Amino acid sequence: MMTRSPVSEEQVPFLRAILAAPDDDAPALIHADWLEENGQPERAEFIRLQIERSRLEETDPAFVALRRREFELLRVWEKEWRREARPFDTASRPFERGYLRSGSFSHLDRFRRQAVELIDRVPLQRVRIGGFDQSAHGLETLANHPATPGLTTLALRSRRFLARQMQAFPRCSPERFRSLRVLDLGGHNRIGSSGVEALAGSDCVRGVVTLNLGGNDLAEAGLRALTASSCLTQLRALGLRGLFLTTAEVDALDRRGRFGELTRLEVSLCSDDPFAIARLVQGELIRRLERLDLVAHWYPDRLFDELELVPPECLRSLRWLGLEGVLSVEQIQRLGRAESLEGIRTLRLNRNALNDEGLVALADAPLLERIEHLDLTFNSFGSPGVRALIESPRLGRLKSLRIAQRTTRPIIDALETLIRSPLKNQLRLLEVAYSETNAGVLRRLANDSTMILRLRPINQFGLPATAGLGWEEPWRIELDPPLDRGDTWDHAPSLDPSPFAEPPEFSLASGGGPLRLDARAAAGFAEALRFHSARCFSSGTFAPVVVASSPDL
Image (cartoon, rainbow, N blue to C red; front, side, top):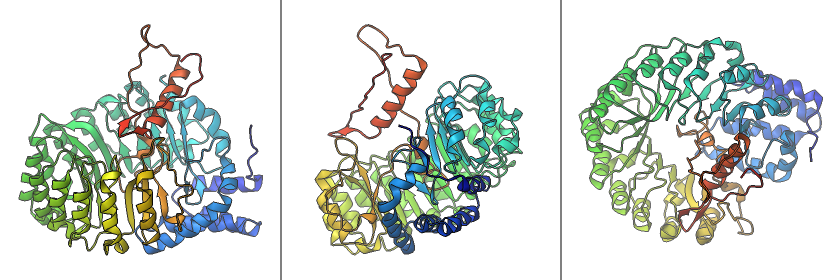
């Protein structure tokens, strides 16, 4: 049943003013004043406090106080406020700076039909379009849409996103993309070097500060086109995950050209080229970076050899370091002693197969004395390693700790240790796996500390069964966002744009031969798999669940 939106006609100009100035909170605050004067003081308060909270770090004590009041308001008013976006909104969409600002559309045609009405209900600013139009006119159709000028974040997904699609970018009016700040084209879209050249030469990307091209088949020519672009002069963050760059491609990336403002880089290095690491570490680009996420599953010793040769003053700007690979105990010890990394405040070692022995070595690393944010998610350690970390005397600056694993049982007793540790009252954020097996210890931890608990659900249905668990202060419990929610580069400490993550590939077969689907059925089936497979685990094993009623299936 269609539900009439509660947004009155008088509010539409306020919403359009917010869309016209996406980087400015003043229009939203003016709208809040109008709401207060017209009998909606709670909605006005909610907008103001979310704007104020967006300007704080999540480890700030004031952040926690604002979040508590926000929870109190949502507990009473959330259902009514979410009616603003019906029937398009789902319960997973977050409120951002007071409004529902994000939307996910399975294909371009659905966005074209629905977004026109949606922009008069909510300030739609962040959009993901999956199954992007395969014709050469997809980008031009998007550019001419009434909602496009207000978009700040645009993610396009299609396994047939050919280079010819990108050729339309230079023909589009820059005014149509005037608000665009984050452009996510990652995920095997097959853009190619020619597509990147067209993108880099388009005036439509002059305002882009974050660009993700991970997983595409770029070559040295594509990287040179990027670094030489006169239209990407505002670029601050670049995602090249999964490209496995060679020495020549790193050299193209490192050349200054017009790329001098880049401060955040996510990059994968080639397994067949050990010299690519040396070129990156010895180059000029790394000396300007504030944040580096490096995927180097091969030659990790070579990486530390190079880091130990770099004078500390050369990496003075580097504050964030993410290393994804297979780090041995010896390599972790070298990491902890590296003098060139003395400026690091955020350390991300997720997906490293880090075991208890490695975590014990990390707990004794001098580097930890300077770390404020530590991310160890999706490794292989258990209670001994976590207990050694909690009891380490080197965590005097630590504010946030992420230790969520695929299972919960092995670290329950380590969480008991945390309850008795001084670290309990020092931490502002703890991210941990959640299921019914560890609900009791988490409840005690939540009710006996001042931190926010971020829970990654791993129970049988992939959904948190928190009802009736007796959380005394539920505003401090933060559920891990679903795949279509989450944070993007301009909101989160991770370069990985989680709400726009690429669905996994699936091979479909039936007893009588290949399973044939029409385009619409295939899109729905892929969306169902993407949604469920990200959540459903059974005894630690991937267990996707699909419910479909289409006769084509």
